[in-house]
Length: 186
Image 1 (tube, helix red, strand yellow):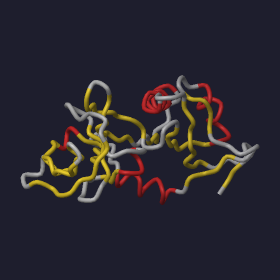
Image 2: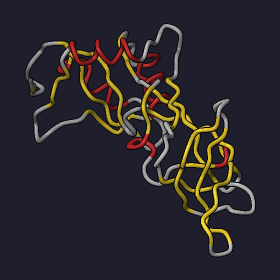
Image 3: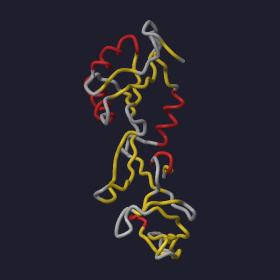
Image 4: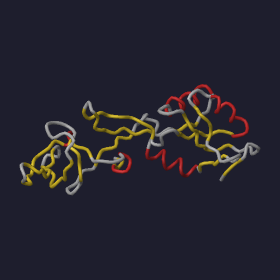
């Protein structure tokens, strides 16, 4: 369902933010615009960097969060809030998010505990990985099996013209590609 600014019904809308400012803009909107219902689900994941593996926290929907407000009376205050770029719209129509969708997301990302969902890479035999630490840093290889104990994997390496199996720590590998495509929410 979409609304123009002439409609006076309260509902959930998608608020656009400045880059990497979702949680700050959501807090500002709640505090300064006095909106009671603001929802900004966030995730935490580990990623290989030049410094080694580092934990990152970011919004589930980068650049966006949800807020419940009356479009006609609160739009100006929402748009003027620090960190907010505007409310998502298509020409003069502001799409409204259904209560059901927001309720389902809230069940997955409870705010009461200020919980940030942790996302972990799911590595299985046959996965292509990149070694991120040690002498073989940057090498692409394939996982052949999981080592009991859960913190190591066996990988296939081309060593002096022969294929050999070697053990590598799970902390020293990553899967290539976009983290959001490769992970599952725990």
